[in-house]
Length: 76
Image (tube, rainbow, N blue to C red; front, side):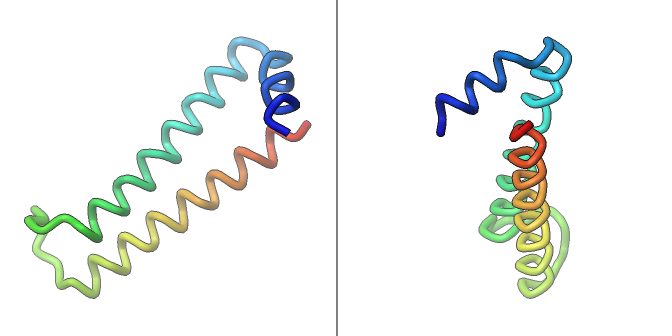
């Protein structure tokens, strides 16, 4: 499976590979940001713990949706 993905990536143009890397980077950024919002002890914005957990979960769900879109787009 991984071999097929790497061959597919090598077929892409330089611009498409760059956009793929940017998409993966933003997936990681949103996921880590969601974890920071949930688990950071000294959060700089004054929010109750319930809102922080909800916002963090929302960011993590959004990152998972982005990941699914990346996988779907690369199956071509």
